[in-house]
Structure formats: structure tokens, C-alpha cells
Image (cartoon, rainbow, N blue to C red; front, top):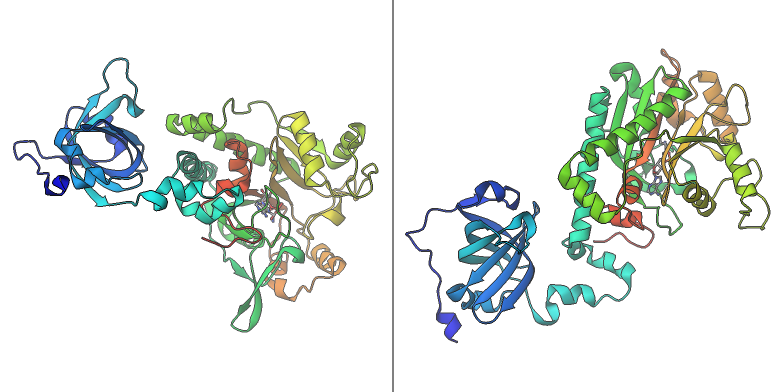
Length: 457
Ligand code: 4AD
């Protein structure tokens, strides 16, 4: 009752407060500032002290409210996740005390911008009520407010910027191909079909074919676009929608392609690692991580089959040895990669288990100029290859695969007007992040994951 009467007013004798973001607090030590954000943590000490850890997306700031500031109705009903504006002076924390950034805001006035409920509706209770961890994806809009989820999203933003910086440094041009298409790239079984003004169309599986058409006008190109796969399997590395970083380069050899992929991965890691805040987040999420400066191991598919058999790893379906021509499933692939314990450029896969556009190797026509990059703890993060660049060879590939070439007229035209040897690759951003930040699942490496049975929030 009494608290409802207490009204706070700003002391007119105080200096005007400058609005800052938490990341700029160090530069404003000693000055009076206003900081707006969300109450991340809240602790009350007696009647006259409240400690608020404020979060604004740029960092965390410990804030101290004392005396009358703790006696108002707003103070007594304050709950975690309320939006507030706090005014005061940023001071270095006293010797022996720690706080984010080494300072705290000594508040002299504050306001609630948007309150948050307590009781059964309290933020913490909403998340704790969920006993099945997979159902937490239903509350993903709340989960992303947490320190871990938001750190992954920040590293993700930095990683996407690093890919763009990398491609810029090698003068590849960014393009944005359409996501609504009428062709398949990676096989019909994972296509999402939809009704496009009465015609059948699909959500794209890969922008590769469009990137290939850009080579004569733009030279080497790249894109960071969403790709879609109707994956029926519920695994920790498959999403139905993912961010696909793809590049395509003209006038290269297969050897060049392997070097391009290896240099890119190392350069992107070096760029994020060079930034202290990002590095600190990676170290927190993935203790012990260190950028790999050794050459990636290069291994042929055939050697991998031999490795699996030597290691006594058997096929799941019949318990027999792997044979040349078998697809290497996720579990044995991971076992091999984890045992070897370093990045592997796995090359020369047999044609029948790979996409229609991959050319046979000259010295061994059983296999193709194809590559997967495998990372410990995750497995495949990159798939790439050279592309069949001869018109008649490509037409023959369509016939062999039983694909109607008609909707691909534009892709075939590419082989008619100044074709050239070229190749490229696609990297799944979520898989790269699962590796870099040591997340168990790619589902935790995107904003709102889409997978079998989930298209919300
Ligand atoms: O190996 P994929 O299928 O290759 C292609 O799509 C080529 N057309 C790319 C190209 O050459 N331009 O996919 C490439 C990468 C995989 O290595 C993986 O990282 C990711 O895309 N990926 C997925 N990520 C999450 N969920 C899925 N369902 C994924 N499918 C592929």
C-alpha cells in the first residue's frame, strides 16, 4: 500500500544522462548514463538493496539499486525479463569484487518500460515446466534469451560476416538466387514441392546450378541462402531448412577446389578467432578449441572403405564388411572422423552414390571428382565437386539418371556458350557452427530450427 504512493523523480541537480549501450560502458566510466535493457538476473538483499544484471544484446551490466529506489511498487513487483531503463554512474567495481566488464552502474533513477509476470507465468517457470528437452524448441523464443543460446547466435552472426569477408578478400561476387525453383540438384527424394500458381515447384535444395550460370558474367561467385531438404530422418545434423554457403569458381582443377575449401575454412576460423569477444564466446562454448593449422588430411573414398574394414566397423544392415560402392552412413563416418581426430577432405566418391552433375575422374572412371569435408564431432560440413562441363556428357548424365532435361534448358545452355572447367561447393552454416561451438545438434545453431515435425515458432 505504502509502496504505491512512492514516486521516483529524477533529481534535477544531476547531470543529463547520455543513452549508451552496455558495450560502451567502459568508455563512459564516471559519467551519468541511461542504459535500457532486460533484467537478466535479479537479487534482493534486505529491504534496501537490489542487484540487477542488465542485458541489452551488447553485453551484461551489473546495476545496484538502493534505498528509495527499492521501495516503489515497480521495484517490489520487478521480475526477470522485464524491460527497464536505468540511470546512474558507471563505476569500477571495488577491489576484490567481480562483475561483467569490471564495473557496475550505481543507479540514481529508473523506470520500468515493460513489466514481466511473476508466479506461475514467471520466465523461469515457463522454461522449467518443460521436462522433455525436445519440447524446449516450442519455447525457442524464450530460450534464445539465455546466455548460451544468444552466444551461439552471436558467433553465428560473426561467422556469416567472416565468410563474406573471406569471399570479398578473394574477389568472389555475392549473388542471391531464387529459393522457388522447378529443378532438383541433390535428388528427388528430399524435395519440398508446392503449388506455384497451379504448377509444381520446389523449395531449392542448393543454389549451385544458378551459381554456375553466373560464371561468365561475374566470374567466381558465392551465396549465403536458405536451402531446403525434406529429410525424413531425425538426426542431430539434419534440418529441413538451413543456411547454405555456396561458391562456384571457373577455370580450376579438382586440386584447386580442394585448396580453395581448405583455405576458406582456415581463413574464416582465423577471422573469428582474431576478435577477442568472439573468441571468448567460442572458448566458453567449446573449451579447448584451437584453430587447426596443420594441412587437412586428404583421403580417397576407397581408402575410407579400407579404413572402416580395418577398424572392424560393419554395415548396419547385414553386419558385413563395407564394399566399394556403398554409401558411408553417418555413424561409421563419424566414428572414422572422430578417431582420426582432424579435418578430412574425403574425395573420389563412386558416381552412382553422387549427384548427376559430377564428372568421372580421368585416371579412374569408377569415381568422380567429388569431395566432402569431414570435421570431428560433426561429420560432413562441406560437399563439393567439379561439374560436368561438356554438353553431351551432361545430356548423357540426364539420360542415365532418368531426369527430364527440359526444365534444365538454361543449365544445358551454359555448356553451349563458352563452357569451361569449373567447380564449387556448399557448406552448411549450422554444421560449421556445431563444430566450432561444440553443439550437440545443428538445431541449436539456428534461430528457429525446422525439422521433421516442427515448423513453429
Ligand atoms: O552435400 P550437399 O548436398 O551438396 C550440395 O547441395 C551441393 N549442390 C553444394 C554445391 O556444390 N554447391 O550439401 C552441402 C552441405 C553439406 O555438406 C551440409 O553441410 C549441408 O550442406 N547440408 C545440410 N545441413 C543441414 N541440414 C541438412 N538437411 C543438410 N543437407 C546438407
